[in-house]
Amino acid sequence: MEYLENLVAKINHRDQWPDFDRPYFLDELNGIADDAYELNTVHGYLAGLLIYHQLTEEMLRLLLQYSEFYVQLSLAPVEIHFPIPDKAMFGRLLDAAKSSMDFENKADLLFLAQKINTGRIELVHGLTKQEDSSAINSKAQNVKLLFDEFYTKFIKAQDWFLLCFKDFRKNVEWEELLVDQ
Image 1 (cartoon, one colour):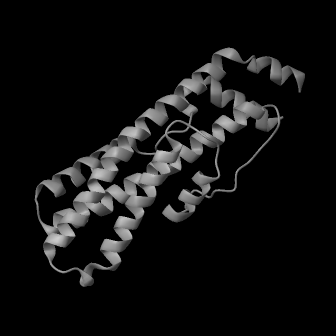
Image 2 (image 1 turned 180 degrees about the vertical axis):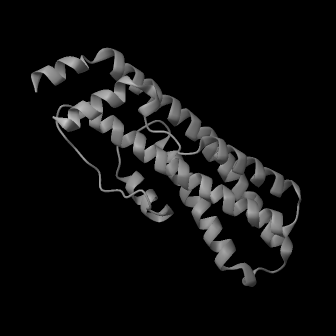
């Protein structure tokens, strides 16, 4: 009963829906990454690449939280829990997202996230193997393009989930589910 009570409280209060922990700081980091790229230097590109990678990870984490919440709402009053720990890293989040429910732009988002991760790995772990600094710049700029596309598609997926949650809130008799239990 406590599970269902918590779920009903969560759907009925928009501020309890899944969201970024620190959205303003993440937005600030995005600005820092953009500023780093505008320096047109190796260290600016590398700093920006690492920030974009981390922001992508945070967006993947939120997409998983949205998926989990959606499934919980869909199955209510049946209780379901998901085993993804809060501290899962990029690869684990990507794997979990692959096996999660389908949602707006999912295939594109997962493809772009994988490309961002691969770009970071190749650049960071192969830093000393590059021909010269222009190769570093080129690869880092490619990651930024991938990130910008990922971000645009993420916003559309986020809007899709939030609209679904609003529909759940207004179209399901949540209080009746509590009474029936």
